[in-house]
Image (tube, rainbow, N blue to C red; front, side, top):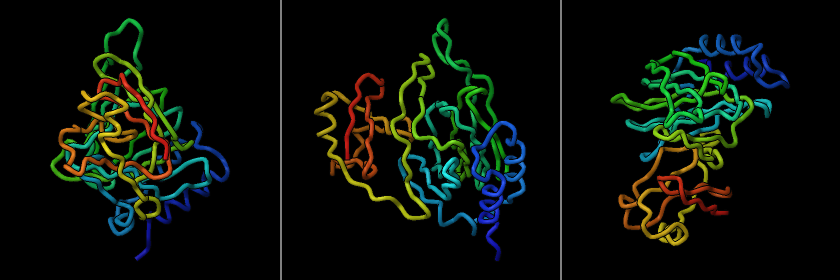
Length: 249
């Protein structure tokens, strides 16, 4: 059986050549995404889940000016409210359903973010996001896992996340891949007690970059370790965003 996702990857490379995705060809890229009908056999090898957070799984790094990623969302998983660092983002739902909530950029005279819309996206639906539209959050509010295909151009290395109640912006840290070409990346475990020593013994939550909003440290298994992507600088902060350290690997 033909791999139609592989065909889509070829079409994207042919369409962009050596260029970035630009406003002039957004509609064409969206049409290519719409023309691809999700087939589990095409993407199952890239669909790697984590029980604690959504995952970013690299499928294709394109021409170096965009990348194609499969995101896997367990039930209840959601992204922080975030921007896109001036990157164009085209999304297709491969399986399940996701809820996208849009927000205006924070304004100095506002006490929090203003929600502008919310939409449920079903299998094979396509959407587009850019900083000129605003900020958004993506969540799996359904009863089954969900999988989505994302194209970012240029690739996002870091972005800003936002607190809904205050509008405060924070750096996400490095956006890392859970897997590349279907191969899970090596992880190491960093002792939670070591992180708490840097951040204060009263720390109850740790925010992971480009992952779920926060993890309750009291729910960490007795091994007292949490996974940290190998060979990358990671940022950890309290749930309030007040304390910040960098752990270099």
